[in-house]
Length: 353
Ligand code: NAD
Image (cartoon, rainbow, N blue to C red):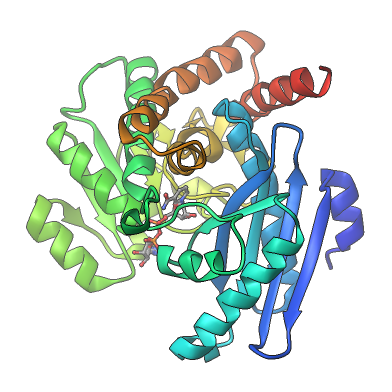
């Protein structure tokens, strides 16, 4: 069983806030991992958790990942995340509104230490509801002057990372002949599939939503496999773009790729699985390095949104991935450790000022 305080001490979280609102039934958690670089920013996940321990573990893990993501991307933001525990009642629009209003008030109580944005299960409309109670939100709809859905920029950033990986690992500057297996054809996955197909790659993909698969096959001519077979696909790149924990003891022996690189957060069930990938000769792009495009996009909203500038910064993921690969090679360490070194170096440099 997870001992929350032991975990927080070990991973050095600054704050974990437990939120309950009697009126709306909101049960939420806000984790602020590290504010060395600036206020913590991270999405609000609405998810059905088996119990509160699972929700606590998720918010703590996700918020830590945000610290490293912002640090490696060169942003002046800290790492934070929030989760709202779904119970089905939020399907009622009135309950949903009341809960996001209550959530907004909880965020406001943190006085800007945490900035909430959209994540799995939430929409820009939910963030707009919370905006009625607090100004500490980002990733608002374009109609109200926000940066809108960050997913296309996340996919664009992943694409830049894949360019670096194909050059260094596959020794080619072309996607023609490169087979990419995408797990999850959601907002990011579908955009990535589109970009890869137009760059000449062969895309094999899956999603638990059969209608999504049917449409993607029809629109982009990609091959579809059943969700349970995606790990067995013979390919150069496996791109997890669904949920976390997919690189684990069960899936590792099945992988037939040379590279694991996708948008999903927390792709490794445990850090040791990153080391295992390395031992198998599979290069891991490190989720928080390659999927930073969305965070970069949202961060630009805070300083007055300019799409060209956001895309230009997301394009730097190409250089960041190359830097991480070079560091891993020169230090003879895994990509997971190299990425962590890069993040710690920036955090250390700022903390020492
Ligand atoms: P999404 O909810 O739009 O898409 C996820 C897709 O995965 C859905 O279509 C869902 O049906 C599918 N899926 C779920 N379980 C699956 C399984 N077992 N096998 C196959 N498909 C499955 O989410 P998204 O915004 O596209 O984000 C995808 C991932 O990338 C998430 O882990 C998210 O946290 C991460 N991420 C997203 C962004 C962003 O800008 N949207 C930024 C950074 C990280």
